[in-house]
Image (tube, rainbow, N blue to C red; front, side):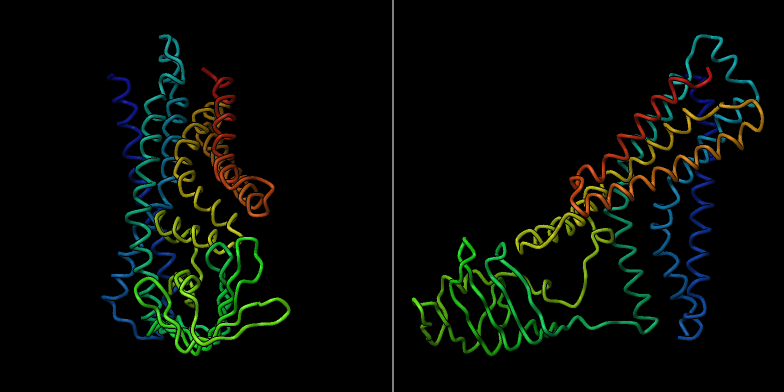
Amino acid sequence: MTMFKYLFRKFLPLFIGAVFFFSFALVMVDLLMNLWNFISNEVAAGDILYLMWLYIPKTLWYATPMGILFAVSYTLSDLYARNELVAIFASGISLLRFSFPLLVFSFILSFGLFFFEDNIVVPSYAEKTALQTKLLNKETSKNQDNIVILGDRGNIVYKADYYDDNVSRLYTVYIIARNEDKSLQAVIKADSAKWNDDVWMLSNPVQYTPDGDSLSVKKGADREITKRLTEPPETFQNNTVSVETVNTEEARKYIEHLMRAGLPSNEELSEYYKKYAFPFILFVVVFLSIGLSGKTRKNVMLISLASSISAAVLFYVTQMITMLMAKFGILSPFMGAWFPVVLFIFISIVLLKHART
């Protein structure tokens, strides 16, 4: 137990210091990138400080993998350089057993990083983005024109000339209703449609229904069709939802909307799974650092740190490739997100097996 306390006494100060250092550096970079815009728009110093405060959770999220990578690499490399591990290995304790507390710590921290992102990083960064957009006079309207939206699993097609988000109303609306086999059921034209709690209410609708080789026309619309007009107003807004920038609940709802509309969802679904897979990069980089430590007797710290950083970069590149493969349907979305984690854990096990002990 004393040995493990000694390990954490060396590791934790380095980890905490590295995380705060990298976080501070990222905050400063963001400030410098936007400084001229703040000055030209005469943004108050208090607002700038508040933006920096809102950005801190995001920077901590980015800095944690870098911080734990540096701390583990430096700690083990320093122990190797001082030959302290020689005595530990001579006493019959393997490298895996000695470093096992670091693996447990990183595994638990991976879950913490997931909940930290979902509950703190996402809302604070969204507030920061919205406030910065407002302060820099870059607000965009959510109104949209020339809209075509699929709903009800592709069985309802909405076409509208214009959507007014202020009153949640569609203007000059065409509703194309299809049967389950995608055959045409009816076409409804309406002057406008107003969102009412959970359904669109049509104004002056006229329904055209196939009748053999002709069309029957009537004023009004069948209740069977209008009760299916439940696509929420958010779908018609002039915005694009990025799964990376919302929490898991909002991402899930957005993906469900895409699936209901019959739209491609592989990319969004893989990003959704990535939200669960990415925090385990902490476990991966610690595992890699342990396996790569002690590969040379000269410049131990420098070589081990460089090897670990190179391996982490390789992990990011691999994940980027598998995510692209998932986007184009070569891999399943689940595999696109989780395959790099499984692959690098396997590589880490191989490296650890051949590590110098």
